[in-house]
Length: 556
Image 1: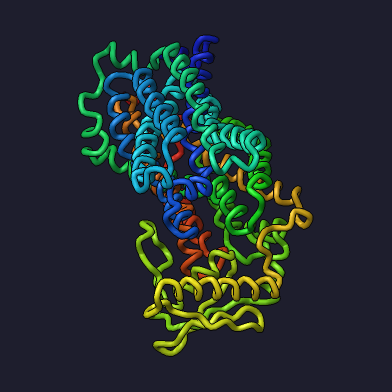
Image 2 (image 1 turned 60 degrees about the vertical axis):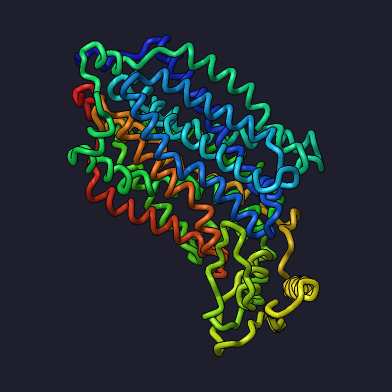
């Protein structure tokens, strides 16, 4: 393709097609994020046979299941996209995504069909993940191959807004449904956002049918240069495989943990740890998204001028510095201060400890819900974690019964071993009441007091987290497209993107909350995104090359 052709501005028809691609992707992300936004409600509906803590972790794992299979979707649909074209692959992914989401809305819960409910739910989540695995690479490739040279960052940045807009749309629908259904939301109202997605599916299919094929793909097809084995070329040849590896560890892994920390973990942190009312938390997140989302395009456009790498690495550096707990610039310490000052004050004035035989303390992670914690240490940790109370663990003599100390109050733990079920149940209720009474006496709140929340400060902190997301995510689609040859671009860029976002990012809430439960400190889960972002910052800075001036048509 000649330079003049590449530099020419896009026609109105091309802009319409790119808009259609972006809008369809918004709908697809809306479907996917409904589950994440409603994880707490879904935990009660589909995992009600478990205790509350295990149910929530299990629900997060079901959410993560969709992310785990995304790389496999990238392989399947990436290959199709490079073999038969971007447009027709889009149609398959949207049908899979929309159909799975609608079925979740009508799926009977645990109380109705028992264990079949969570099994079917997880299967549907995996179908959604497969579909999304084929969506992003196609959308980013499709838009970039339409964009004029020198404007790829600006145009692909619109695709980058779709994930946040999809999340925002899901939050809006949930908020309106909560208002409409009131107390029935947790009973049946939660199904409405899933069911109405069938309308979004119809619109998306219509949009996808009106799209034209990518000009770069058509050009390669006409010239007979299409890859006959995209998977083999992408991952069986070292010259391409090493770029895939660099893209994963030097770009996407860090971008992913910043993305999910800034949007999902922040929401979970507000509602599960700081006990902010879900409606309030969703409104604050939604407000930060409204203000922050245009910066995807700002940073995407800026990357056309100063480069993609400097912006992405700058965002990672800021994230690493400001995620670190208990520093003057710690953003999550500040969230605690402004969203639940009573909790912050109580933790400082009446620190909690658990003195126990450390050999009896196991990792507080029960994804299947089948493990029964019977040691006094495990039971004490479970109860403290359920109350969002930070604590430190003090080793005790072997065989000692755990002792919880909250301020000056000490509560001796227990083990249900040898007790009959009725006695164990009564002892459990008594122990939980003693812990809660001691926490209340020490000033630990059961929920965030709305009158004490500094809403504007919380909004600004959430906006800052979103701006970090826009820095690392805005330019990355263009950079990934520019790293790979046209003939295997869909396949090659999709896999590192979805391993990074599906595994490093999608598992973040589950890993972080398990780390908190294990360590006892409410900030301990932040070390997971800090370490991954720091790794990517080092590898990306040293080994990833700038790509903004690459001629993507010359790499076929």
